[in-house]
Length: 435
Length: 94
Image 1 (tube, rainbow over the protein chains, first blue to last red):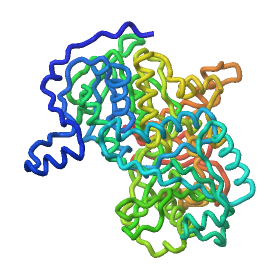
Image 2 (cartoon, rainbow over the protein chains, first blue to last red; image 1 turned 45 degrees about the vertical axis):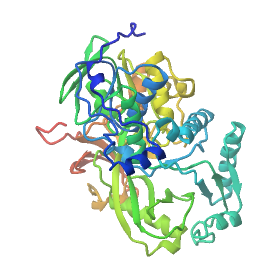
Image 3 (tube, chains in turn red, yellow; image 1 turned 30 degrees about the vertical axis):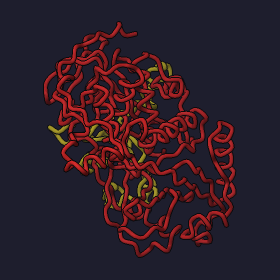
Image 4 (cartoon, helix red, strand yellow; image 1 turned 90 degrees about the vertical axis):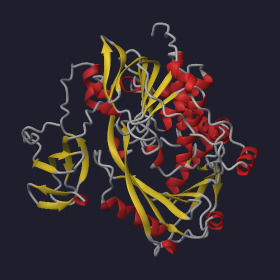
């Protein structure tokens, strides 16, 4: 597909200051020597005129793609362009949940691989991302829902992924706060994935950025892409607020704004942008040591290490680029929270925010080549981009380096829509607002 | 909270309505081919700016409305019935 990529000399590389290996021994040593040995976690690079690969978007997926390109596929002539400072986009604005309890076998395999990468991530990055496998518990409230969840759990177990059915009593034992016999939707039981949990999201961005920078990737902050240049049907680079950058390959990893960037290349994607809200309560003593989801509405909650309950619900429901939520959804989430966990009714919400997400037409992500040669897209992550960061980055790096889809992400190509091979977890049809 | 001025019921809260997506898409002719139908069913402009969209007034007159709304400010510029040709404010196409 692509001509053999050229290699470009990297004069900036020599000036790079390594932040060194983090270890207990080093903490001890720095403690004795006045903490003077620490340097920046990643080098603030000035963009060069030319790279082999330019990744647009310094969020989780962009940074992970750069990291795996440099470490797994031997391509370190890579720049990651981020319009602002690192970690202020969706990677630092989500509810930090990791899990692999999906319905379709392809999705189970993909997210399970991600979960396995999470399990070894801190060692791979030499960075404490506070990966906490506290378990994710999905409650069900009707016979039909029990059947559906059982089928999903069986599918997971057939593929070697952990899933465990819990009785009402076991749910109560695990989460005493749950009101099993609540008046609206009594809890009939739950399914637990013990290996699911949470990760500190900021540390994921920082850890990948640091490791990618160490591996030779240029992390360029405050560099907004304003155009994508092409020569016929081939991409040639990007226009940015810091000048034109030539590249053999351009990869968009800007979920939330994928359509806007793709439009710069003349492409229309099967994506709508929607707002998802999240909330954090005031800090309280430990009351909840799993990630809990409500089955009769869209509500999920976990407790952060600071003690605040982190929770969220469904998307607001109409196209929006406004990074703020509206009141009806906040009310719906609060109603679900109080129905399931009435003991928390007097808890105050400390802060609330909304993030813009790519809602794809079938509710599944897109890791794909495009009709424009040399342009790749990582996007369409809907609600679930965070948990997929390691596998998404790896699959995107594979696609860029090998010019062929990663076996675990072969079902995520753009061509699936025209071919009628959509991967629709919810069976909701081509309506992004319904996923 | 959006307040949508329904042409038949007057201004109501968004909770009375159901969003039904992009209203700029027109069903192609039956023999238009795969590319045209793929674009119709799946591809969306999804721009940041004025957006022509369907809303169903489920909690009111149960009619379908066309609405021109801004996807960043959420401001509503025009509301009409399904047959109305609505356009964004003059000079502000995006």
